[in-house]
Every structure is written in structure tokens, then in C-alpha cells.
Picture 1 (cartoon, rainbow, N blue to C red):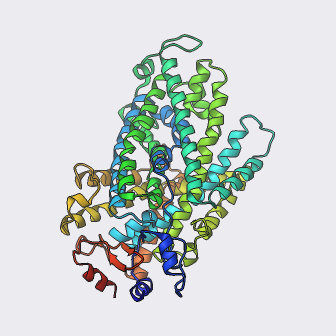
Picture 2 (picture 1 turned 180 degrees about the horizontal axis):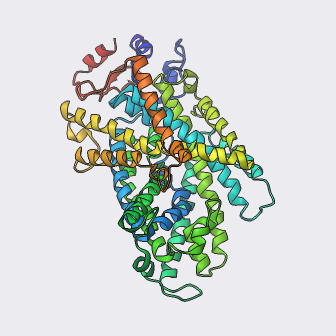
Amino acid sequence: MNKLKEFYNFKQESTDVIDNSDPENINQLHSNQSIQVNQYGQTVEDQVLSRDFKKRQVSMMAVASALGTGLIIGSGTALKRGGPASLFIGYIFTGSLLLVVLFDLGEMAAFSPMDKAISGYCARYCDKALGFAAGWNYFFTYCITLPAELSALGIVIQYWRQDLNPGIFITVFYVVITIINWFPVRIYGETEFWGSAVKLVTLLICFITCIVISAGGDPIHKTIGFQFWNEHAFMEYLSEGSTGRFLGWWACVVQSVFSYSGSECVGIVFGEAPDPKKVIPSATRQVFLRIGLVYILGVFLMGISVSPVNPLLAAASSSNASASPFVIAMKTAEIKVLPSFINACLLAFIGSAANSDVYLGSRTLYGLARDGMAPKIFLKLNRHGNPYYATCFTTIFGLLAYMNCKSASSTIFGYFSSAISVFGLLTWINIILSYITFYHATVYQQVPREEIPFRMWFQPYSSYFALFFLIIITFFNGYNAFMPAFNYKQFITCYIGIAVYLVMIFGYKLYYKTERVTKENAKLYNHIQTVITLDEEIPYIDSNLEDKEQRVSQLS
């Protein structure tokens, strides 16, 4: 027992995961000891999130967790500005960049799974200053997205009852989401599993309906085929000629980023996934399904069934399902009932997104606390294994949704939401920056290829390619603030997020004098495991060390 006590008193700078062979044996061994442990055999300081997600839940969330109103509603704005061909090519271009980002994240998570969210990889493989900025930016992204989603829920229900105050529905969903995130993570996983299933079924109905409309199987029996592609493949936006067509395509690229935004959230789910070295590679490979069959196929079918010059599309707002190009296609084809059905399905889209916002925000805050970049109180777990202080703090931001009950506050809140939307791009950049050091470290430190569960093709060149274009998109994200005339409000909302991000990086680095992680000093192996049997306790570091006694000596 002396070695076991020494192990629990041992302080390691970056302890990510503690695995135990049998928690019941651990409790029995410690029953008469002064060490305070939880049901997983961890001290209060070293408690980590439980891996209670089921494999099917992780797989489903990898495919549909990030699906939101960006595709089913927001893509209509891009179609109107760029046309069907620009929309299709824009989604393929951005999807290829996202593919690299998710594979980079999946490779790091499978090799060294941790429950510190994305900030943990940034701090471990790049710089603690970057981890600090990445973590807090990611946290505030979901803190502001949460009230935005709650507001959208109230507005969607007003599709049927405009006489009711949206605050009623905001309150109902706010309470339900808070309760779900209080219980064991498997409850959240099950909720997201069925919510994701509803999303996929809804999209399947929309896709089949678009095919039927294009083929002339709708009530007006007019065959469309590729008529809209022939007439308005590339629309002009903000200018005329080739410049206008390029800006139309660029508008589609920028909008596609926000549709794809949140796809990296599966990296946080990995922190509570069972058997991560098997589940994570499998879930990561499924991004092909999400990007190819959901997003790219979706915008293609949208482009053959809705004209970019459709009056309904031009007059649509983003307040409810009437703005969705899929619903507009149904209305134009005089299909009854389905528009109301799709609006009802939007409740699953938005409700699931709001539910994820609380989960992702709390786990990001927990990860920051694990790295000493947030108050330690956010490390405390309830009896269900949830970081309850982090969850409560995140849900507090949901109260901002009530600002939208007043029109003036709604305008201010809209600017606030737009200001942080660029953080999605910055998060993708952070992941790639971390991966580049990780990749070169595995090569320099001669990590055996069989120890890396999977690796994307053409690395590290594919990561450099994606990094370059993501920086370009981020820098020119606010192009419309300069055309046709300078709009200072648009400029501020598009670029203030970048300014805050840079201030956080350099401020933290100057204050704490952090050093850049290099391929020479990157810690690839720092997971502590504990092997405990009834007659032997041997703590060791999970590394390439062959001698077990040498591992034990490193802990002393």
C-alpha cells in the first residue's frame, strides 16, 4: 500500500487519464486508508470524467451531432447570393478543409485520449498560451450560441402561435436542457442519439422530396432537371461580371463554414468515449458520411429544386422554417402539410444543438480547469460524474435568451452573436497548429507506426494546405464590410473576435512566460495508469519503457 499512497500523492504536471482494472477492487483496497477516493478509484484532485458513452452514441454523434439550422435554413442565403454551382463547389472546398481538421483531431485523440477538450491538445502540443486562448474562445462560443439557440426555439414555435411570447418556450426548453445535463452522461448521449436520428430522417425526407420535385413528381408535374444550373449556376454578388461571380462563390464558402461549424465538437465527446483507441478511429472515419452524404449531397439537391431567384427565397428571413430552401421548394411545388412538418422537425435540430451547447461548454471549462487555466472549482464532479459547477456556470448564459423578447435587445444580441462566430474558424486553425507539432514529434521521437491507430494521407502536407486556406478565409471573412461601402458595425462584428483571441494569446504568454512546444520536448507519453490486483499494486507510466521497475522509479 505504501507505493499506492505514494502514487496518489504524486503530482504530475499533465495527467490526462487514469484507467483502473476494477473499480470495486480499488474501493475495497482503500476502505481502510486515509486516501479519499471516488467510485472510479480517483482522489478528489485527480477525478476524471467517466467514459459512459456507448459506441453507437459516439458513432451517431460523429455523423449528426453538428447538424443544425446552418444547412437546413442558412444555406438559402448562400444559394441566393452565389447560385447552385457556387454553393456546391463552396461546400466541397470547405468540406475538404474540415476533413483534414477532423482527421487531425481524431489522430491525436486516438493516440492520446484526454478529457481536456480541444484546449488540452493546444496546450500539450503547441503552447499553453494557445491552449488558454483556444479554450476560453471555445467556451464563450457555446455560451453565446446557447441563448441564440434557445431564442430560435421560441421563434420556431411562433410559426404556429404568433400570439404567444417566446419567453414561455425559452423557459421550458431551458429547464429541460439543464436537467438533461445534470444526470449521467449516458442520458445526454441517449438524448443526442435519438435527436441525431430525427435530424437524419428529416434530411432524408427533404432530400427525397427535392428529387421528386426535380423529376416532376410534385402536384404541379413540372420537370425541372438541371434547369436552375443552366440558367443561374453562378450568381453575381456585390459586383458585376467575374468579380461578382467570385464574390458569390466566396459568400457560399463563408456560409458553409458556419454550416460546418461545431463539427469538431466530437473531439470533446471523445473524452468520455469507451475504448478510445478503437471507438475514436471508427467515429472519425465517419466524417466522410457527414460531409459527403449530408452536406454536399444536401446542397446539390437543394440547387436542382430551388431557383436562386425564387421570390420566396429573396424575401425569406432566418426566423423560422419558411426561410429554408427545402420548405420553399415544397411551397413552390404546392406540396401541403410538409412545410409544417419540417418546422416541427426544426425543434429537434435546434433543441439538440442547445443541449450540446451546455455539454460542450461545461466540458471545455472543465478542461481549462484541469490545465490550471480556470478556477479549480470547475473540476468538481457530482455523483453522476458530471462537472456540476461547470455545467451550472454554462447554463447561466442561457438567460441571455430573454434579451430577444425585446426588439432592441434582440438587435444588440444579434451583433454579439455575430462577433464570436469567427471563433469556429479559429478553433479549426488551433487544431491544425497542434497537430503539426504532434506529427513532427511522432516522427522525431520515432513513435512506432502501429501505436498510431490511424493517420490521414499526405501528412503533414494536407495539414499545411488546410491551414493556409483557413487563415485566408478567416482574414477575408468580413469582405462584405468593405463592399459596396465601408460598414463599421459589420467590420467590428467580423473581426473583434480575432482581436480578442490574439490579446489572450500574447497576454497569457507575456504574463506566464510560456515556451513553445517543439518536436523535441513534446510529451507524447504521459498517461498514468494503475494496475491493481488483490495481492499487488504497481503504478507505472504508459510509455515505451520496457522495464517496469524503471517506470515505478519515475514516479518516486
